[in-house]
Image (cartoon, rainbow, N blue to C red; front, side):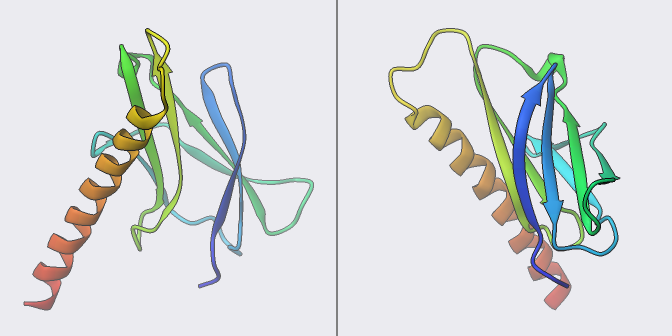
Length: 123
Protein backbone atom coordinates (compact mmCIF):
# COMPACT_ATOMS: atom_id res chain seq x y z
CA UNK A 1 0.00 0.00 0.00
CA UNK A 2 1.21 3.51 -0.76
CA UNK A 3 2.17 5.89 2.01
CA UNK A 4 -0.94 7.61 3.35
CA UNK A 5 -0.54 11.31 4.10
CA UNK A 6 -3.17 13.23 6.04
CA UNK A 7 -2.90 17.02 6.05
CA UNK A 8 -5.04 19.23 8.28
CA UNK A 9 -6.89 21.94 6.42
CA UNK A 10 -8.89 23.54 9.22
CA UNK A 11 -11.21 23.20 12.20
CA UNK A 12 -14.55 24.80 11.43
CA UNK A 13 -17.84 24.69 13.37
CA UNK A 14 -16.58 21.89 15.62
CA UNK A 15 -15.34 19.70 12.76
CA UNK A 16 -11.67 18.88 12.11
CA UNK A 17 -11.05 18.73 8.36
CA UNK A 18 -8.15 17.28 6.42
CA UNK A 19 -7.05 15.95 3.04
CA UNK A 20 -5.87 12.35 2.64
CA UNK A 21 -3.59 11.31 -0.22
CA UNK A 22 -1.81 8.09 -1.11
CA UNK A 23 -4.79 5.74 -1.47
CA UNK A 24 -6.74 4.60 -4.51
CA UNK A 25 -9.76 3.56 -2.43
CA UNK A 26 -10.90 5.10 0.84
CA UNK A 27 -9.11 3.39 3.75
CA UNK A 28 -10.85 2.60 7.02
CA UNK A 29 -10.05 5.48 9.38
CA UNK A 30 -10.40 5.44 13.15
CA UNK A 31 -10.36 8.39 15.53
CA UNK A 32 -9.61 7.89 19.21
CA UNK A 33 -9.69 10.03 22.33
CA UNK A 34 -8.22 8.63 25.56
CA UNK A 35 -7.90 5.23 23.84
CA UNK A 36 -11.65 5.18 23.09
CA UNK A 37 -12.85 5.18 19.50
CA UNK A 38 -15.17 8.05 18.64
CA UNK A 39 -17.84 7.85 15.96
CA UNK A 40 -18.81 10.18 13.17
CA UNK A 41 -15.66 10.55 11.06
CA UNK A 42 -16.38 10.50 7.33
CA UNK A 43 -14.09 10.17 4.32
CA UNK A 44 -15.31 11.47 0.97
CA UNK A 45 -13.85 11.61 -2.54
CA UNK A 46 -12.40 15.01 -3.33
CA UNK A 47 -14.28 16.17 -6.43
CA UNK A 48 -11.42 18.48 -7.40
CA UNK A 49 -8.51 16.00 -7.28
CA UNK A 50 -8.55 12.35 -8.28
CA UNK A 51 -7.05 9.97 -5.71
CA UNK A 52 -7.55 12.47 -2.90
CA UNK A 53 -10.09 12.24 -0.10
CA UNK A 54 -11.50 14.74 2.37
CA UNK A 55 -11.76 13.66 6.00
CA UNK A 56 -14.28 15.22 8.37
CA UNK A 57 -14.05 14.51 12.11
CA UNK A 58 -16.81 16.03 14.25
CA UNK A 59 -15.49 16.90 17.70
CA UNK A 60 -18.01 15.58 20.24
CA UNK A 61 -18.90 18.41 22.64
CA UNK A 62 -19.18 15.95 25.55
CA UNK A 63 -15.44 15.23 25.22
CA UNK A 64 -14.49 18.87 25.65
CA UNK A 65 -13.68 19.73 29.23
CA UNK A 66 -11.12 21.74 31.18
CA UNK A 67 -7.59 21.07 29.99
CA UNK A 68 -6.03 19.39 26.99
CA UNK A 69 -7.92 16.87 24.84
CA UNK A 70 -5.94 14.95 22.21
CA UNK A 71 -7.49 13.06 19.29
CA UNK A 72 -5.54 10.51 17.22
CA UNK A 73 -6.45 9.70 13.62
CA UNK A 74 -5.20 6.32 12.42
CA UNK A 75 -5.56 3.85 9.58
CA UNK A 76 -7.61 1.10 11.22
CA UNK A 77 -6.09 -1.99 9.60
CA UNK A 78 -2.42 -1.17 10.22
CA UNK A 79 -2.88 1.09 13.24
CA UNK A 80 -0.56 3.66 11.63
CA UNK A 81 -1.08 7.14 13.05
CA UNK A 82 -1.91 9.58 10.27
CA UNK A 83 -2.46 12.73 12.31
CA UNK A 84 -3.49 14.10 15.66
CA UNK A 85 -5.06 17.26 16.92
CA UNK A 86 -5.35 18.84 20.32
CA UNK A 87 -8.11 21.01 21.76
CA UNK A 88 -7.25 23.17 24.78
CA UNK A 89 -10.06 24.62 26.88
CA UNK A 90 -10.15 26.59 30.09
CA UNK A 91 -7.21 28.56 31.43
CA UNK A 92 -4.53 29.52 28.89
CA UNK A 93 -1.39 27.41 29.03
CA UNK A 94 1.90 29.03 29.92
CA UNK A 95 3.66 26.41 27.81
CA UNK A 96 2.59 23.82 25.29
CA UNK A 97 4.28 21.02 27.23
CA UNK A 98 0.92 19.78 28.58
CA UNK A 99 -0.36 19.32 25.04
CA UNK A 100 2.82 17.45 24.12
CA UNK A 101 2.52 15.23 27.21
CA UNK A 102 -1.09 14.40 26.34
CA UNK A 103 -0.03 13.46 22.81
CA UNK A 104 2.79 11.27 24.16
CA UNK A 105 0.36 9.51 26.50
CA UNK A 106 -2.07 8.86 23.65
CA UNK A 107 0.71 7.52 21.43
CA UNK A 108 2.03 5.32 24.25
CA UNK A 109 -1.46 3.84 24.72
CA UNK A 110 -1.62 3.14 20.99
CA UNK A 111 1.81 1.46 21.07
CA UNK A 112 0.83 -0.69 24.06
CA UNK A 113 -2.29 -1.91 22.23
CA UNK A 114 -0.28 -2.66 19.08
CA UNK A 115 2.37 -4.53 21.09
CA UNK A 116 -0.24 -6.61 22.90
CA UNK A 117 -1.94 -7.42 19.59
CA UNK A 118 1.44 -8.42 18.14
CA UNK A 119 2.15 -10.70 21.12
CA UNK A 120 -1.24 -12.42 20.76
CA UNK A 121 -0.79 -12.88 17.00
CA UNK A 122 2.72 -14.35 17.27
CA UNK A 123 1.98 -16.91 20.01
